[in-house]
Length: 321
Image 1 (tube, rainbow, N blue to C red):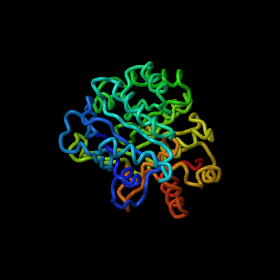
Image 2: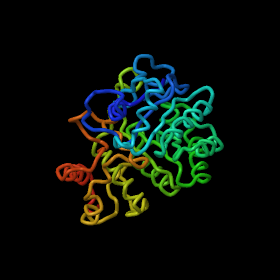
Image 3: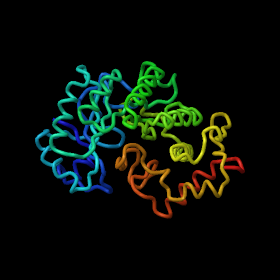
């Protein structure tokens, strides 16, 4: 058995539920219990009632032979990538290597993997097995919040991430969740380091899930998230330097660019779309249909572009943007 995101199941024909938007990546989740106990996640050893959820997405289980039959035809249904996510297993990556082999035997689509790896050697083994990109997830950008929410040392995880990036250039990704106790200066400084190291970061907005220790925490303010999205976009496009960013009490107040230049750079709305591996759009992972859109899973229409720009520019306090 393997868990498949509800959107992926509908797109592949495993389910008949209608969707407001279909994913362009097929998302799978391996494992039923995680040895970690991250306070935002229902997959940990302490969470009993909501194991079928990640973010706002449900993950029903299917027999692997059924999934194989549909995956063969995935590209014809608009799928451009496979993303395998895994809880932390007792056997490390051994079961993952077997699953990767089965996926690679039936599709030539690029395969991304997000799993708990212990060292650089494991990352290399996974790449050698056929994985296109390996994600060494950070999730939390503040060291003390990391200890409280995930347990362990953020610095140790960063050492592993950057070591993997040096050994496997262009093949390493990570996840950053905004709204878990970090400041804007902190997360943008980290994103700048990731860009410099060639690490691709997928940005998420924290979403409180019932049954987890953080179920009562509020998600981040949308204007703050827009500032981080815009900053990350400018950094990865090399359109601005982190040294030109200005902060007031750790809150971003300027990108160090003239307003007209900034608007031109952000005009197409790309900065506010889902980030991560190519073709990873994660529709409604952070959002409810009809509600606030943190990460747009498609190109923005003109009204959305203007609204996102307005949310951003109204929150900047310096005349020089």
